[in-house]
Amino acid sequence: MSKVLKDVIDANKAYVQNFGTKKDLQLPPARQFAILTCMDARIDPAKMAGLSEGDAHVIRNAGGRASDDAIRSLVISYKLLGTKEWFVIHHTDCGMQLFTDDIMRGLLKKSLETSSIGSSGWVDHGHGPGSLEGQYVNFLPFKDLEESVVEDVQRIRGHHLVPKRIPIYGFVYDVKTGKLNQVSKAMEAGKV
Image (cartoon, rainbow, N blue to C red; front, side, top):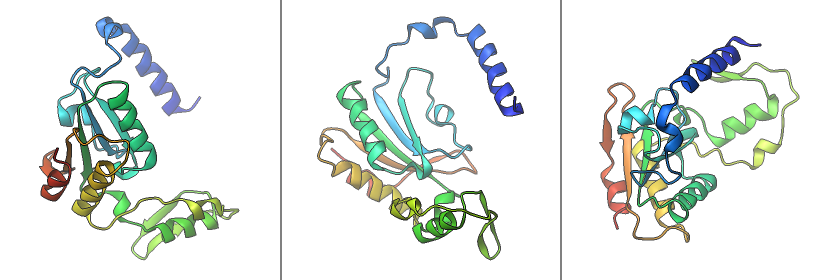
């Protein structure tokens, strides 16, 4: 058993011992909102937004992007579980700004091993075989942080399954301070 697996199993045993009244939480989120944010390990959505279990839906992916799957989750969130407001939260120092689709596709074509970034760019450490399947994936990288928030709010707002009555807020989370900073253009795009 790996150390990580053992640590997770041990932590879960301790968690179960103090689970208490959490068994009584309802399926719909109590505070009726959802957050779309990045999977970055430096972000703790519960602490960042003052959440307790059962408060809100948190949808995470690489970059906190409004992918088809993220929008699918948001639609389920409001249609079946009653969320009334949504937050799109990207963050400073995001790894999604460090590559392009072409770079990712090239790395995947060489091998499926983990790559690293150095002073001269990305380096693949594998010896193949790679995969051409990555050639058909849009990894949704971006260069301009605030503009990526605006794009995602606009993409969600413009989706045919998203009602215009749901406000969509756009923020950038600062990983050095913990502060949420409003993105004005995104807030305007997401207004009801």
